[in-house]
Length: 244
Image 1 (cartoon, rainbow, N blue to C red):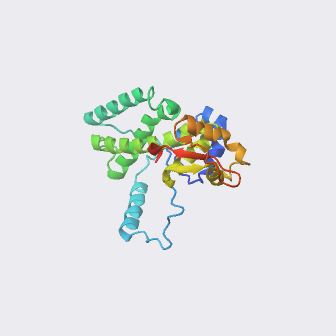
Image 2 (image 1 turned 90 degrees about the horizontal axis):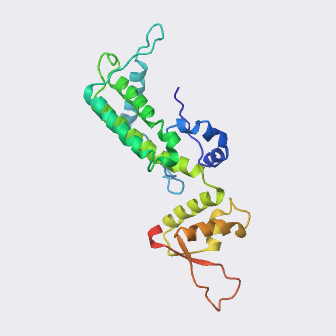
Image 3 (image 1 turned 60 degrees about the horizontal axis):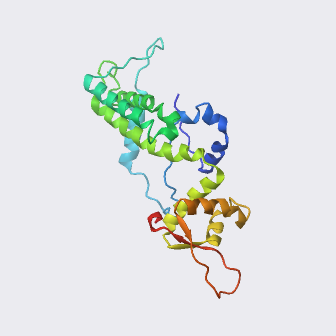
């Protein structure tokens, strides 16, 4: 069963609170994609989809739909040639190493990645050879392209699932760090950060934990207070140049 969902990014915060979904392996079964938001830079009159792209998509869907099912519902059996098997074995060996390294934080998802790649392999193979895909072994090139799709999904899964284990202050600190990078300015005030997060915090005092994380992690450094300025001063922070 394949499910394609386009959801608002805010839904990820709701999913993060549903511990049962993660514990039962539900969130580990999706191929995640978290594209950069275009809000604020969208074209007022975007270019229409080129005719050749629309035509290619239409033909691709029809080509996949032309794949025959066996009359009795028995699944087709697909085979791999020797080179494809070698490519897949190398990928699985490297994946196993990474599950105890950079993918340890999402090992529930990473443990299913090899199976995900194999299912993508089957789709690509059926698309390329819709009428004789059961008699033609899968080649190494198809494995390589499916692994590229798996690599894409891995980066996005790290972004999505690694944040789901974070508490609220860490999630907000991550948002501030990304905003500081995009903002590109060498200093920032507590008031600036509050305005940025005003929809997620009740008051400026709720920023204490967020700011502590940003300072402890080296994103910010509290600047010396300026004397002689009228009014109640807002804390000023220097932004680590590496953050930018």
